[in-house]
Amino acid sequence: MIKPRTQGSPLRPFPPEPFPGPGPLPGPVPRPVPPWPGRPCPGPAQPEPAGPAQNPAMAPARIWFDPHGWPESLYDRLLDRRIVMVHGNLDGDAATRLCAQLLTLDAEGTAPIRLEMQNLGAELPAALSVMGILDVVRGPVTACAGGRIEGPALGILAACRHRLAYPNALFVLAEPQVSFDGTVTALASREEQSRVMLAELFGRIAEVTGQAAGQVRADARRARLFSVPEAIEYGLVEGHATTRGLPGPTGLARPPRQGDERGGDSGGGPGDEQPGGDGHRDGQDD
Image (tube, rainbow, N blue to C red; front, side, top):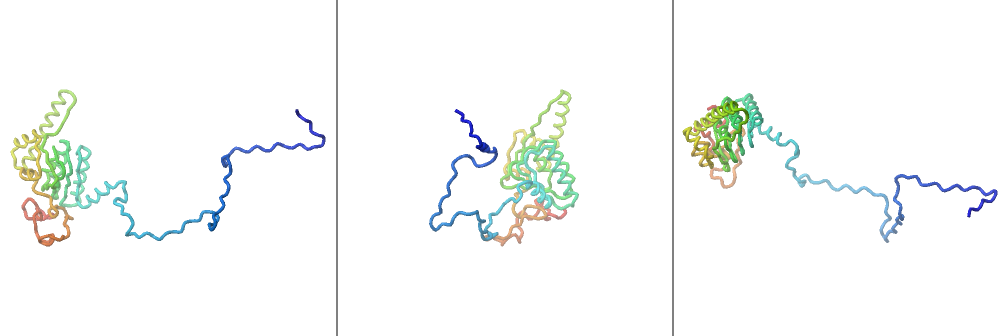
């Protein structure tokens, strides 16, 4: 039942509704926790005092300071020392980059060049293009083979003036894998081109190794595998790559260690001279 207001009593407005917006969630308000005896009342957070500076000698070492782009910078540093690295599958694009590096070093001078071949396979046209550049480079090029070197990549190895092998190297003399598509006329033309390129590849390997061309072809048909001693005997490489035998303008000489018979690398030893037997060290004209 609604009772009328008495005359003269003022009207009371309704309380204002809360405005929606960010604010504390509804619920019971936490009561302040009384401090324990002897413990100060909580106040505003104070900044922690700065600790003593860390000794740089005790700081953890970082191997790669710039993980982005380090392969390119590392290859550039090797190129400055006239060392060219090639690995993986050598296709047309990779062969173009390799030829550009070799031509750049040739334009800079006639100092020795070291070609590092690591786990290398190659397409036949790409290998022949690199072989052609190696034939015109003025400075002596020494190939150092490691890992598995197979197929037409052996032609690149054979085109270098000196050839050394790391202890883990394996050499596979095998025919390259090729595939053609197109018209009958195009297939016949490409097959003839492949015969000419194979003759150039096997002829270069036969010339370097001293083997007959027919023997090289027969070994390639059965994919003959060579270890380092077998490759030396066959003529694919001239010797082992040792610490003092690695060529190049910088060399890889190590400091004398305890137990060396001659007290370090001051004296002559195997590998100090070029494998060709000319008695000249790297950096001198043959």
